[in-house]
Image 1: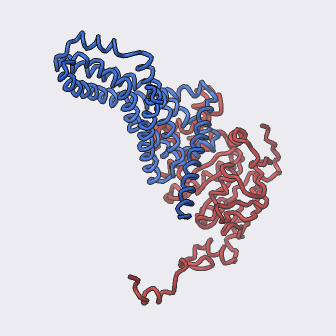
Image 2 (image 1 turned 135 degrees about the horizontal axis):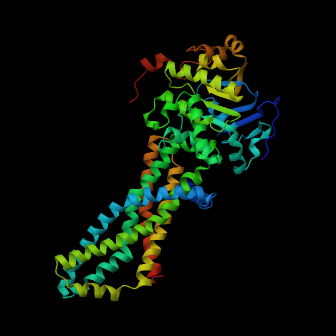
Image 3 (image 1 turned 180 degrees about the vertical axis):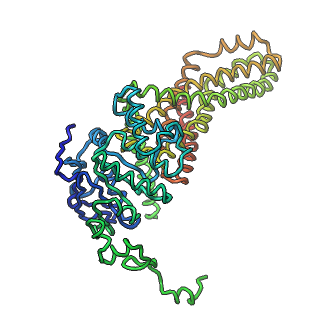
Length: 274
Length: 260
């Protein structure tokens, strides 16, 4: 399968994208573009479909309406075989890292290379060590995943995701559960790798400051719609109530703090049900 | 009344959907062997994990079951002065029934439960999803080697179980209870038919292997990716596989013995 490459073309283009789970719209006629070579952040409260968007871009889910072009290809029309071949140009960092627990760090990073290339063992070893060097973990090559800290696990998963030098990197909540040092390391690594390898990156996250620090463009989604977009500075200063509440972490606002309930005096002073 | 009929119908349709889905998974598993050079090492590894690691429980169980059958049988046969028939009794019981059935039940408890738990955990920790995102099909990389390893291992384990059980019966009958050595083997040789007894036993174990391994991999890949989901899937594997073994044993025995 030949993949057309047009350096000026946006990497991901979604037109009228519609995706439902049951009767609930996750995306309701959404339009968005992911520019080539940039870091685009998809932000929003929990449960708004950020990870679903990554799954749609990766072809794991099919939209019920609209079109989704990835690198000029309508990904929803691919057969299983074509999809698997197409995914070799993508890398994905999973929220839980998803390292294979029965093999060591070296073999985890070597896995995609062994499956998709015919590199001689000596070259393969060099490539794997270079990838581990890029994330600062060359010295941990012989360790098992159970011997790594949370931050190290995420970095090994990152090394594995870039093993085949993908054109598109998808990051699913890369900063969740990381201590400040690991978070700082990851923030710098994502920016450095994107620029050094000329990749296009999509970060799904609700960690506002870290994501805003490295993103070139931000989309904020809620209730199946894009409620805000723009450069980080513009989004941070946006006064739209829902957007403002999310960006500044306000407990109450357009999204109420309280789950819908009867009046408190009725609940506290009313009759106790038998 | 109508509601109950509706509920029954809905339940039936749901069960049929599960059977259909399991059939799709099976077909996809059977026809996903794209690169033999890459698949063979995966199969060997699973044969070792599933087959070799099941050997201790199969050998120990076989030995005890053979000894118990000999002990029980002797106490009945001796009343009719027919203790020399002990070899026949042990061999036929083990080769026709106990060998295939008990091995399949032990295999379901030892290997299939582990298979389901491992696949479920890989699903829960997104290892299968990450494989898919790397362009590697988990059905051929994870599921297919386990299915074939189970299918190959169980008949071999059944043969080992039967051999050890007969040896256990021999040790108990001849060396402990004093049954004549020549009579024990001679009666066994005269009574056991290769086609009717041994081949039928192997056919049973092949059918059991197919069913229990299919249940195990299906439960694993369709498990709910939570801690509770892993537990449920593992339990279902053991329960369904055990019931399937006993049910199919009846059907196969009826067919083989000419009951139908």
